Image 1 (cartoon, rainbow, N blue to C red):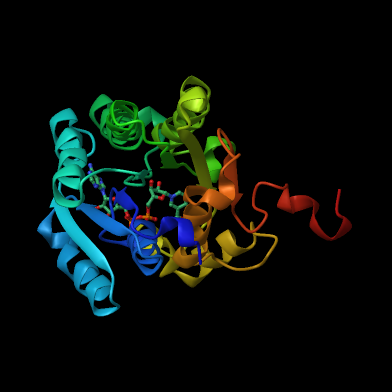
Image 2 (image 1 turned 45 degrees about the vertical axis):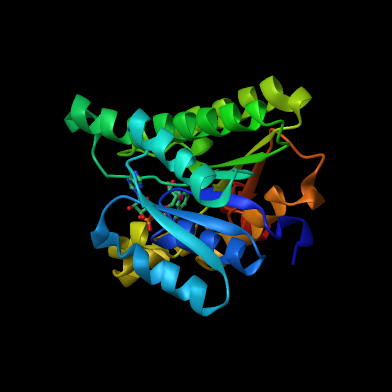
Length: 261
Ligand code: NAI
């Protein structure tokens, strides 16, 4: 537990499922006031809010598409109007789609870039504006992926968006370090969330993924949420501009495991 998070106002994008949901729940368990952003009511954001409240936490929901400037402004405004400020912004919302590059339309490319990369830019910029205006030594955490480092055929738009998030994070960390605003990046490996549900439903496809993970298992959303709350807490007060890989060793050349090579 991180006492420094008690009473802090935290916004999490794409928080109605998967990693975002686990992150919102963990911040609420730490005593933070959580803004749960969701895209559509089909995502059932009320379930997240109800679960948080049932466990004694505080949370409110707001619809918004992170690829739209006006919506991201609304999300930050909502946090300020509802809870008085914004201390932590978690730019988590993201999408992926498997498309060989020769078939990748500009529309599909733009959709992924606008959601994953532009969404992180807009969320970071709006959070920074609020933090600078109110002299808040806040924390911004972007959700990248091991594919900011590992090339991924058929996912060129996704890998490009995550590579972009890495340098966006590092640049903002440098730009705002002197204002006390920390900006960090998390790179999960393969985690058990709806984004992977179809693939992991096929035992062979799932085994192919597990074979790429030196620790030998698919990660749990709670294991990513644990990284996020640490980065947001005062325990990470001197940490900015890093990528925290939470990938069971996936980026450490698994084909060399057990003395091979
Ligand atoms: P998920 O599909 O469960 O969650 C993504 C969330 O983002 C959904 O709630 C969705 O409604 C929301 N979303 C999508 N487009 C949006 C938009 N335009 N505006 C607002 N919300 C939007 O998947 P997961 O796994 O929880 O993904 C969360 C983040 O973690 C993504 O950025 C993903 O790229 C990243 N990630 C996930 C990994 C995994 O293995 N699950 C591995 C590496 C990175």
